[in-house]
Image (tube, rainbow, N blue to C red):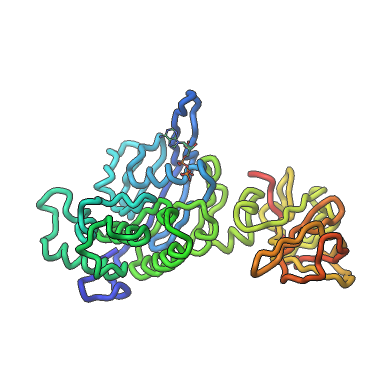
Length: 384
Ligand SMILES: Nc1ncnc2c1ncn2[C@@H]1O[C@H](COP(=O)(O)OP(=O)(O)OP(=O)(O)O)[C@@H](O)[C@H]1O
């Protein structure tokens, strides 16, 4: 990222060649207190294209923070290679590049600000460390700090003490500090998780707009799938140190690779496939034949498979219907969720969840017809 001058809008930033982040065969193991070895990062190979917003998503303990810390240089991997912005920072035969020498900025969950310094001094901090001969002149530092404070909506807060700011404002200061040095890659470790829901939504939108304006590559750790969907150009779903799937939010949501991904993101109906092979557009399932427009990644695989479909792609009706992908069933539960109601419908021995408009006629015990568009059905593996 090239920083703008004081008066230049962020959108006018000059582009420079960048390469994003390349991770090849990365492994990091820890010894747990009971002596067992935990593979926190287990053979991860991943490319994060320059200028993309890349989210590492997964439940607690899946290894996303460890992977981020390896990129930052705060953790020393056991094996593999890392190249950031074209610069190899870790690899065989390479002297590991120390955190302060890596071309990255970082924002933590705890804001990690200096409580006794002013807002402006906190933001300026990365520009005032390192060998004196490499530092920029004071006037230039001030201009850059003013600029990022403006970008973060903190212009009038520069002289305040950190303790006089709200949590949301403190995280803005931390964001400002991460971008002030103009690195091409900024790493975020759950930066919004300590902030209340409304402010978090605002900051999330601002962060995305700022990243697009300035054009840096963002690597963002979260366990919140809604946050991932809203922010990401690329989502990497992790489990037990491994990459389960990597792709755009749409890819991951509409074409999950396996059961784990389908269940982790959004609400999916997973209907067991009962026989292998067959027509690639029709499979035998626990509720009868299901038509699928796109067979999906699990179609030709051996082993347990499911037809995955999103709850909001199903319809529900009290009037008898017939045709493909239509079943009769009985409502067993209805939960009003505001913008939709979740109806749980028993079809044979299986339950499907249908997200539809609230309808007072649709109550538990009611016989109904449900169905799903074949275009919304994809076969997924039980596990890779
Ligand atoms: N310093 C450490 N020593 C021992 N084990 C560790 C260490 N750091 C992480 N681990 C283990 O490595 C695994 C991955 O941890 P990590 O913090 O990367 O997961 P995470 O996905 O970021 O989880 P969270 O969202 O809870 O932070 C976990 O099993 C964790 O207990």
